[in-house]
Image (tube, rainbow over all chains, first blue to last red; front, top):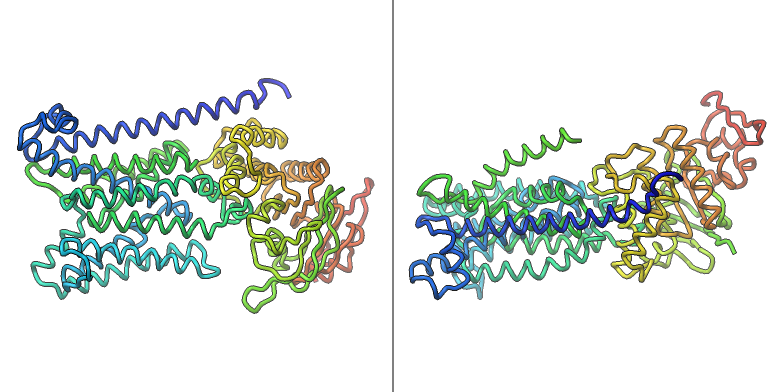
Length: 351
Length: 264
């Protein structure tokens, strides 16, 4: 062996790489915070950024209307954007790893479609659940169906001999089934109900309230530590299912709990803000390009990227058409698609 | 003392169909390579997966005093490592990270390699890569590697766990001659150095004869022959199992050569 020994070079290089990834996480976090502040500042009555900052840090120092705008309108919307972005991105990242498919996301595997069907049942057919307050009926229905759709996937995964390809195909079949059912309900819906349903399915942050924010924050706070705890196992799973099992990982168990987290995160998000595609698909891809697939960094990077993108999309939804508030679901897809395509093509060149 | 792996009355069913039927293999001992050969569909991969605890099997697989069939997947992983034939496609991990994950993923679950600190794991991963001569590839991405390098990286993920039994499924079939030799030499050396029981599925009969001390020939889920290369590889066995007319000769250096004349 001549020249510098790999041993002397590799460990410092690895330590350096870990530090760089922490820096990238911090950078994504900073980007998210800036986007969040801009999101709070933009709206029909423009607030200067300093007013926003003082209004948040010291609510008493602001006059009545400013305080109402910031605390009752802008802040719940903006925080909802960040939380939904993070939750959908984490759900997407876990799904892509667990199902070994870069196209997996809550949106592409039927969770959002199932939620739409639940919403349609509540809106059009007036279905209601016992013990649920009227204002929560629709999100409760959307949640039930979204959660149920992942449980169906889950049940299928439990059958012996079911490969991940079958799961992905089944998810796609779910998308078509629920879309057809929603169309059927739309067909019989009254004019007014139809309008509400269409608006709901576009995905909008305007339904955010502090209570809903609290529920989503709780779900995210409860699931994230478990996801991070499984990060080495998920990293090993990227080396192949048999490989991971031969390392002593119970892949069936890992998949079960991961899909449980996914269903909670995706169903809660979709129930509160409607269909928002693309975040769950794109954010993990961006994270993967930035920090690789060591899941200790990949999962948090996905969440931060998702939060930042969602927040920026929220800003765009308020500024793209002056005077109008576009449903944010439209914006994520419209801006997300070209952005994503650009990322894919620039990456192809580098390979 | 070298460890020994004994298989007795092993059967594996997929539904009603028996893939392996009442298979018995007398003690395979550590320190040398055992090659598993046989035609396509003979059950070679299934036997490896059964030994690794990846498919449910009936019968007995004993490693010294331990009955492996009674262990969970995590219990198996303390002794046995399986290297599948298919390598992962597109993975954004470096060689070093992948090797590290082979150690850290089970430590986290409190399974084997217990109590290994992150620093110790890193040092061990690096030692393994250097032992396999790919220390300089540590920081390269898995999808930047050539086929031969990927196979060595995959071997590192198995070796780093310091298994008692190492199961390799056709590790050389996609490689050029240089890398075939390099992988086989490394496997043989490692088996000797660490007294590992190596069971390796090979397609190349001459290669099996060259590197293995013992050869097990499988045919439709049963043992067709079992013994030293000279005992297991005969024109009669080849005719019966592979349906070829072949000559088996010794070269000047004493290794068996198989010359296949035609299919029958």
